[in-house]
Amino acid sequence: MLRKAFTLIELLVVVAIIALLIAILLPSLSKARQTAKEVTCGVDIRTLTQVTLTYAVENKGFYPALLHDGPNDRVGSDSAYLYHVYTYWRKYMMNEYGLVRNQFYSPNNPIWNDDDLYYFNRTNPNDPNTAQTMVMGRFYLCSHGIVDKASFLLGVVDPGLPNKGTVFATRASDKPAVPLMWTDLNRKYAGVFYSSGNRWGSNHLYDVQKNFPEGTHNGYIDGHVLWAPASDIKLRVSYPAPGSADNYW
Image 1 (cartoon, rainbow, N blue to C red):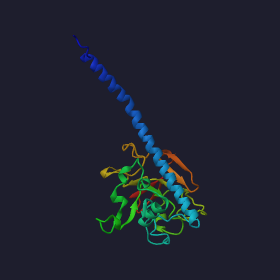
Image 2 (cartoon, helix red, strand yellow):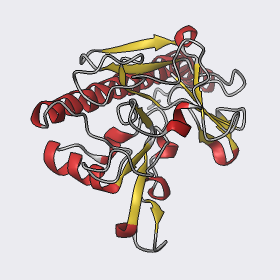
Image 3 (cartoon, rainbow, N blue to C red):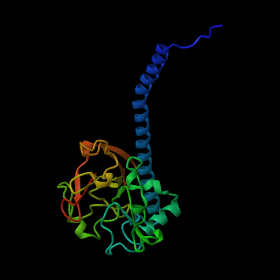
Image 4 (tube, helix red, strand yellow):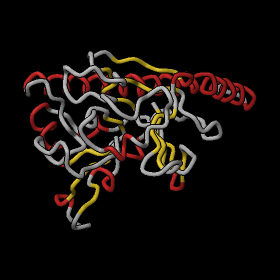
């Protein structure tokens, strides 16, 4: 009794059809994954913004001074980098408001979310608990205002921004030149967003040949969050020295 079976040609046709379907579907699946990351990134910026506003309501209108070592140190010699957070604040925001580690980093820039940056500036390299600061994958803009870091304000290179006065808000009653609170990380180091070790200096850098982010999520002091396209992103601050660590938003 003869058994029916596929011929070699029929098998090849089936394989070819499957391969064609995969080729058609993969770009769509990749785009869907990318869209999901974009949405998550935007939601995290919104969460950080809302948590910051909640803190202000509970603390006489003051925003958390994340770049300072504790709530009472607002004029000391603390971090001048917009993507640094002192360990005190990292623990406070997580314990009081339920933030988690991943919310400080974009899913589009996972390379920044590693232990060397999360437990940054350790007095004991082998003990994460001795970390003094955390390097985020975000910019936080509400720690400088007019009261501190004159050297940082001198790094303002955007001609549309003042290098004095209320540049960034430190409390809800401020009328700052920069109405932003949180933004995606966009840092050009030594002239490039994409440096050695495959370290991305931007949360939305998809073409390293282009060397410029596709856009950025901005969280404003009034609570809303918007996606800003690449055409809106400009060099704002070059600190600590011109051309070394350029900050864009």
